[in-house]
Each structure stands twice: as C-alpha cells, then as structure tokens.
Length: 290
Image (tube, rainbow, N blue to C red; front, side):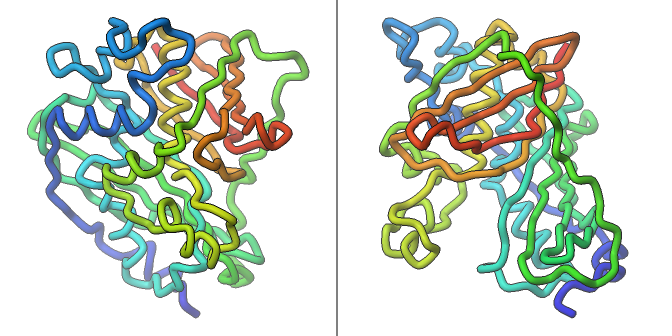
C-alpha cells in the first residue's frame, strides 16, 4: 500500500532551518491584498494598511507561518517514510495555525515536520502534517495541513473528525467583500508556491480548469486579514489560532464574500465566491483571539 500509516506515524520528525525578514513579510501581505482594500479611499497610504506594507510599522499576520521559509515544510512531510503517493492525487483539504506568541518581523527558526495522523475516508486517505517552529526564545507556531490523497482509503484505519460544522441560521453580524485581483495568484506564488496550476493556463486545463485558480492558502490569508481588519481593529497580535477547510476553488478576478459571526473570543467565518452564485470556498473556519 502506498501509505503505510504505522510507519508514517512512527517516523522521526524532519528538521529544517528557516529564516525571513521584512521583505518576505511585506511580499506575503501584498500577495493577500494588503494596500488594495476597495472600502478605503486611498488604501496604499491608509495607516491600517501600512501596518502590513511599511517596514517601520510592520506587524505579521499569523497566516504568514504557512509560507515562512518559502513554505517547504509541507513538501517535506509528503516525502516522509511510509508515504509514497502520486502528487497528482493530492488535494490540500484544510489548514490551521496556532501562534504561541506574535511572529517577529525578522527571525530564524528550527522547524520539525511529522505525520501527526492518518485517517481513512474510504475513497481517500487524509494525512495531517504537523509543523512546529521554535527560535532561541521558544515555540513560535504550530501548523497543521490536512492533505487528501484520492484513491488511498479503504485500509481500515480510523475515520477521523468530519469537520462539518453547522452555521447559525441568522445572518452574520459582519460581512465584507474582497476582490481578487486578476494578477493575485502571480504575486502570491512569489512567496514560495510555484505550482503551475496557479499561473499556466495549459497546466490548469490538464487539471480540469479553464484557467489558473487561486492558491487556497491565498484565500486563507485574505480571509484572516479581513477578519483582523473588521473585528480585531487591525491588530494581528490578538490572533491566537485560525483554521479553515478548503471546499471550493477561487479564480483570479472574482470577489470573496466573507461573512462573520462574532461571540466571545471566537469569530466564525464563511467565505463564498460572489460571481458563481455564492459558491462556498472556505467552510468550518474559525479565528480564536484575545
């Protein structure tokens, strides 16, 4: 069997050394739409947007952890012992990040990546790849990537959580729309995800799409920024954790409708593509904050 769950779970974590500075953070923020909010008169010089784009005022959105070090951790997990799969059968099903303290604008860290769980969904297997980062001052963040591998289920393993939350029957108390620029995927991929699916029309056609699609992690970052700006007063240091399930694609040039339900220290979020009859693109999405 291509996935040996016992061997994958028992394997020693893979260790890497990563580093980043303000340029990496600024590029990531630009890739998820910083400096281009349509609800602001002049977003390029808006004080709130400058906290994402100007080095002298810079903060770090926690979703940056998914690309820090050019996002190599997840690729390492897919080549772990016991994991021998066809990458064409792989889908990124969900992502979570928990920050243990604010991510510094400049830093270096040691990351450890391991297969934390293997679930049997009958028609697919799900790998949970966990990456933990720490610097000389201690833990920084923990990332979990849920990877669906089509055709590799049915081995009798634990099914795992369903993750199908029910949204409130009433409308959210906050709702914003964020346009996806036509060139957004071209900019976002400079943070490390070079998959031609997001840039090459010919490759996208082979994958069954009539044009390149946006990175799921770009939608993920755009959503967290919208919640931060709308609910948290633009203060990214208040974010404790963030998780989402990828349930649909986004095409550059579309508009994201981001609906939020606030309560206590949690924001529940639903994200849809306006131009395709509000098709769901992110579900089971939560932001925990102080």
